[in-house]
Image 1 (cartoon, one colour):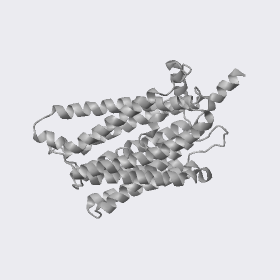
Image 2: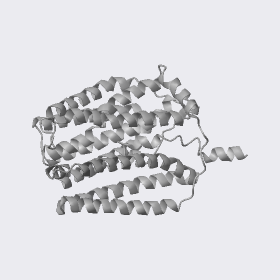
Image 3: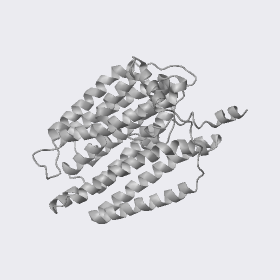
Image 4: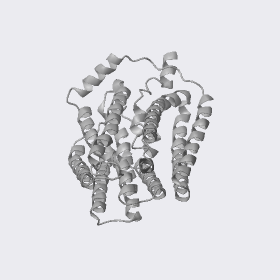
Length: 366
């Protein structure tokens, strides 16, 4: 789309498109943060597990079906017609969602928490040496490299390998297949092996992925089958790390600070996850062809060297983490860990369970 407007000498459609994407992401983050506490408040306690389990299933099925439909549209229609039907589908889904959400009951307001109180709690964890600060540093170091891979890999296939839009959408669907397979397997093993082993497996997959992409850049590997393998591994690694993360986080904090520190952690990780691709993008942009969609492949190779090095160096760091046996250190569970591991952490930016615990309200009433 950018190449089409550049050839026509038009810059305002691209600027408007970027503004629209920014607004979409901004409001989606607000909605995602509000969604969890809202549903947590209005759902009966016995129905919450069944609801989120059903949400996982239907989110996966509908998302893969949407990707397949978009792949079909881009394969058989021209660019603008395919985009028209894609945005029309998104608009229709938004209208239906708005009608459905308007029919739901509102939730009670959460207990207020002052900004100063939140800052004091965060300061006690972030300014002193602790397991929490140690793990946050490990997490941020990986995030600085790993979250940039999905957009840059897709861009590389488009501009350097001439992979069609329909094939790229198929690869994204295969990435989701990798997520679902890993989530299915890890759900049945993490209680026995613990989050540390899942972290290590995720790092091994990420390091392997960096090697595969490096081999593609060097010309040793090519073909749709290789790309499909890379996307499946990419989805599996992301899912394993996210699942281990939400299972390990409760071990790092006191019970009274559990959910507010999870929200603070999610906010920090989300900001770094958003800034990292922007900073890497300045390096990966080819300055010799500013008007063309090109990529600096030399810096892209450096990126994978950095990703591999960080993954390998974090293996001994993760091996040192401590897993407690505290009764309250129970794993969190959301549909995001199944379908949206790359941005699922943003759904934890709400301090929700303490404010919306129905059992707590019953105890207070008694």
